[in-house]
Length: 68
Image (cartoon, rainbow, N blue to C red; front, side, top):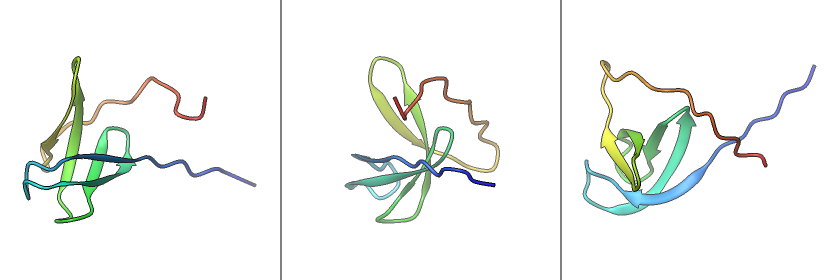
C-alpha cells in the first residue's frame, strides 16, 4: 500500500496578523499562516486572496491538478 502526499507552500498576505508570510496548504482551499497559525481560505476570482476561516466555513474541492 502506498500513497503520495502533496502540499503547497505559497507567499501571501495574512489578514489575521497583517504580515506577508508563507502559507501552507492543509487541504483543499485551506491554508495555515506560519506566522500566527491562523487558518485561511483561498479565494480565486482573477486575483488570489486569503480570508479567515472559522468553524462555519465550507471549503470547495479544487479541480486543478498540482502534480502536472
